[in-house]
Image 1: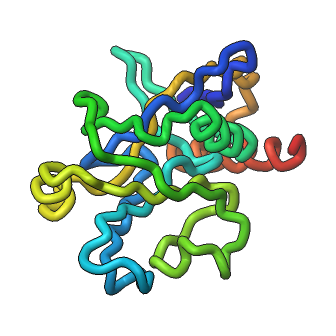
Image 2: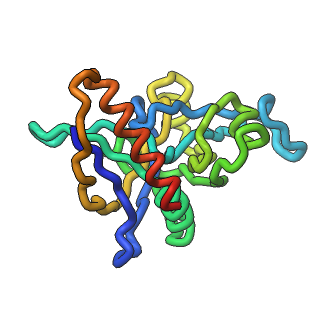
Image 3: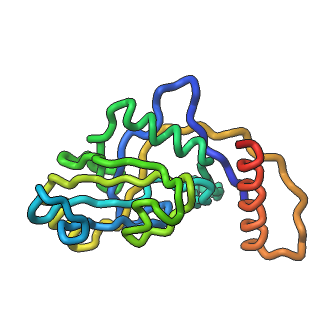
Length: 201
């Protein structure tokens, strides 16, 4: 199965356009719903209505299907970092959707960072175990319908980004060991991609 790296198109200013709250996030990381008793700020009372979660995880294979064509996509650490920066530089922090279908009002990205430390990162405090280079965000939900009918009921469980990325040239085929299962081959291919990106980065 093909593995395609998605990159930012250097000729375009388009990148991540919106953050969607979804039931099944492609990156398979649920967000944490933060309430005042979980994250205390002296000047804030009551529920804070903040969702924290991974927005993009580097080198994580994400399954895609287009008709009969099945493949995996992934983003390098460099692309994740650039996407996180461009999202804010292009003032997209108030753009949000529900299940990539319905535009929402009242959701804003209020905090954004890249995981740089597996021990002291803020995400660790909230029980997330994310790879270095992951883009994490906190979204404030000032939309009663979304909070009450989708977040509190568990209908949405994580974030999924919407954006414009280009396909990097397909990687050359590597020798296949016939003794490996399909899953083993996929794991080996992913390991090769990660090693290559670390050597080039």
